Length: 245
Length: 289
Image 1: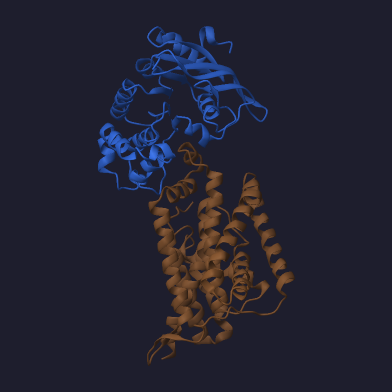
Image 2: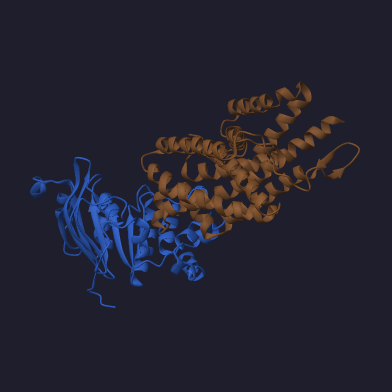
């Protein structure tokens, strides 16, 4: 496995909602095995970008390639079958299903079904609380447990790239720390991860590379270790030298 | 002790009503679509079963099998080429599409078979399977009820314990999230319609064996399906059986106390009362909004 291999390449992507342009010429590339963070405030276009990559909304122009293959324009389920997975904002676990059934939904695709037992063991070792609650309906989980379930459900399909959309939203700091520690562990095993976050400090801490979005554009990018928190904060809020965007 | 007989018949008939309603419940539960053609599609099943039975010397098993295949095919085509296309534009256009299917089916049957009353002849038509001093159970009514139990048990297994069933439930809970699991929700909708049509084929045969029917009786069964689903609760399998039995009992007890002319009225009065007291249905799992 080449560590420098580009897994996902987004080139000059534009997305419109009617007359409103939500994304302006967004380009990014994600290397295999890396943890990339996508930072931005509410309405900066992070979720729109994710939805475009996952085929939920159709880009007006631009290209999205995964492992060298164009995926833009494909329906979501076909993109997922190629190895992209997403833990959506708010988790969106299936309400009338048990924890176990939710996990089995994650292993819905034919090539994941055969490995479902091992995959379930694996996510139970990452989040032991899910094992305790495996026969409970997901409605009865706490916010943090629901988030853990959403991540686990995405992992059940053995993806090669995982998007985590706002996994810390509305959770207690202790839980967030716990979840991020697990994300770190998963990444150590070679999974490529994209973290979508509003928290600048946490994003920089847990990622190798960062993109900052402002008003539908990528205004700053760089190795997370080399970006200064102040610079990122300016890009995030559109202040100082980012005021003209 | 005629009242015991009424109760027994009400329960048995409730089974038939449940089978009629369950297909509508599936489609509503999964795609939020009220299929106004469901009653007519049941009657299409009845006519198909009758014609095929005439072709094959009264072999009902064979004709039910063929009817089921044809009905599933009709369902798949209607869903893929009509309902899925309009479903993108919201549930109202899809509702109108099913209404037009309903009119087309009823008139097609009228054109092909004429307006005469018909029935499916069976060797068990005038046999009683239970005969006591207090009540008897006719073989046809018994078959109605047992079939309901089998259909509901089969659907319970399918929806609860298979990938296909879980995908259907996931798509009905959150279609977007189901797509993220790799589920082709449009295809799932088509399969759900096929499943609904399979139950319509079974319901169709039972209706033909239990009652006389005309090309225009579809609406009557649509209303029954509606009542069953509303009383029992949308999207609940056990609720469908409860809904069927409540409706059957309401009708036959109404007939017992007030006369046969009040049978249908009593059924719908109970529906209206339950709509007022418990609008989400007796066993609904849906959250009230």
